[in-house]
Image 1 (cartoon, each protein chain N blue to C red):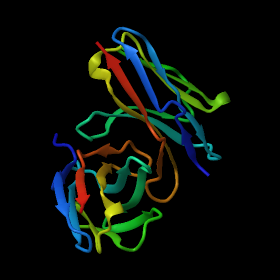
Image 2 (cartoon, each protein chain N blue to C red):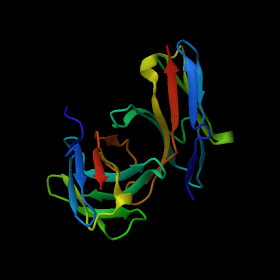
Image 3 (cartoon, helix red, strand yellow):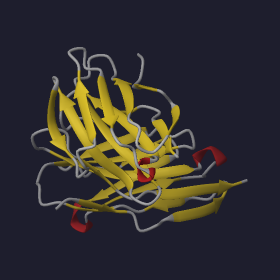
Image 4 (cartoon, rainbow over the protein chains, first blue to last red):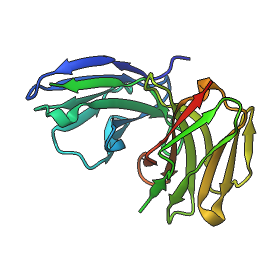
Length: 112
Length: 115
């Protein structure tokens, strides 16, 4: 059974640009959540989607957005990139709320 | 508010030593779930264990064991006879029932097992 797949794994962007990250959940999982991990702030929750609806959102500016498609695949977008957006972005999926979440390998974003 | 504390930022042990990673949580919910994840250098968080608030039984899985004590709001993780491959960052996490997926992670403990 394939795990959570995230693409791209590594990317470098310039300040002011925008970036889109993709996540394919484990087959059958309908909940997809996103996390940002930085050395200073640790793991922080970005948002969660279930059946194409955003159910929860963390405390991030509006530059961070996401969506989920009918096949449960999800994308997150960060616009007007700032240096502080450099981080590991992790996607996780679960069957339903309260279940264990399983993570992908993450997308390493560097903003220069 | 829900919160997870892992007071140990970094721990170094020599191979074959036993090591315990501490986790203290805060929640007012009566139904909640506790987790441990391992993050090797590759970045992926690997699920280790899930415990719900109604099950205080300790768990043992090979060299890993977990001690859940509601009275002290702790969910500690012990690795027996540590190995170099255990070197990673370990996260304790708390989830609770509410609309949507709710997770809060501790700051993590970096474990280095030296040969």
